Every structure is written in C-alpha cells, then in structure tokens.
Image (cartoon, rainbow, N blue to C red; front, side, top):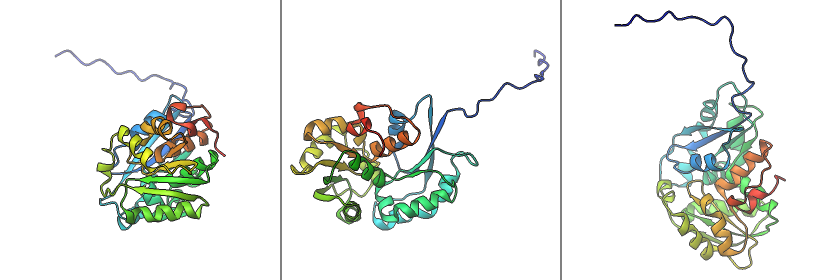
Length: 257
C-alpha cells in the first residue's frame, strides 16, 4: 500500500464572496409536488438567482380541510430554507391552500421563521398579474372539484374581479393534476374562455400550465396567467430581474406594479 501523503494546511484562506449567488428565492412546496421545482428552474433560477426548496407534509385528496392542515407546517418549512440567512423572496407554492388558509395567515406563518422576507402566494401573484395586464373580467380554469373551486371564486371576486366563467375538472389528487399534458391545457383553455373575458387565470401549481401559456394565449387571443408563471414573475421582479421572457407569456414581459 502506498503511504498516504502528508496533508498541509494552507496558512491563509481564500477570499469569500458575500453570497454564492446574488439573490435567493425560497420555495415551500407540497411533498407531492411534481411541477413547481422544474418550473422555477426554467423561469427563475440563473447564475444570479438561486432557488432553495423545502417540502412540507401533504396528503390527498385535495379538499379544503386537507389544504388547511398544512398551515402549522409553514413556519417549520420556511425555517429549513438556508437557516439564519436572509431571503429576497419566499413562495408558498399552493394556490388552493393559500386561498383556504388566507394570504395574511400564510405570510405570518412564514415570517415567524423568516422575519421581513417578502412572501409570495400564487393567488395573490395571480391578482397582481391580472391587474398588470389590465384585466377586470376574467375566466378561471382549475383542476379541482367544485367544493375546492368555490373558495377560489370567492377569492377573486373579493379582490374586485368580475368572473365571466369558471370551469373545474373534478380532480382530487394533485399527482394526477400534474399528469395533464400541456397540449390538453391549450384545448381546455379554449373551452374555458368566455368571449367577454379580458384574461384567463389557470389555477394550481401542480399543473404544467407554464409550459402551455403561449399556446393558450394563441388559442384564446387573450392573456393567460397561471399559478407558477405568476409566482415566478413576482419572485423575479422582487429580485430586481426585469428581463422580458415572452416565451412564458405576456405577463413575463411586464414590470411588477
């Protein structure tokens, strides 16, 4: 056996950068989520922006009761993302749960672990995106059941939107929602869009809708806002990234209002 070499300790350490990457985006996602991480790798992560993920427990079916059960895990999930280091934004990536729990309650739970961080939820990002596009009358498409869709309708109505039409697909398992092909979402958008609506909101972070935005917009001739597209847009703008990304829809060309 060849003798091991003597290990030498360098007398001085190399200079350290302030951060490995300039900006940090935290993601709290469901244990069952197939879609948010790939979407944020495509739309947000770069040599300048890092995306850091924590998963929290979730059990199907997707009902208001099961969605609400995630609230106690939000603080612990946020605490797992780069402990004791600040973030530039943190997103809780569940649209229906954010509606059921409430944006303010989600923000309070996250900030208990990450004080002062801007907190992004998909429904509020959707509201900001629709307003940036000048939409007042909207159509909504969700993969949920009627029971889980009802709070979504109430949420957007409470934020001042007129809902021209609302279509849901009746799925109860978010893993099945993730298996809907992007091409099918284009066809579904065409069916769900009311002729009088200014824009279409496609709800659910499980859907691979960000991959279908351009196709949906071409099919309906109107802007489309999706859950992951809207949160990615919001997080990028909060990180000072104003680059236009038309390959992810009209919203990704706009500033954050």
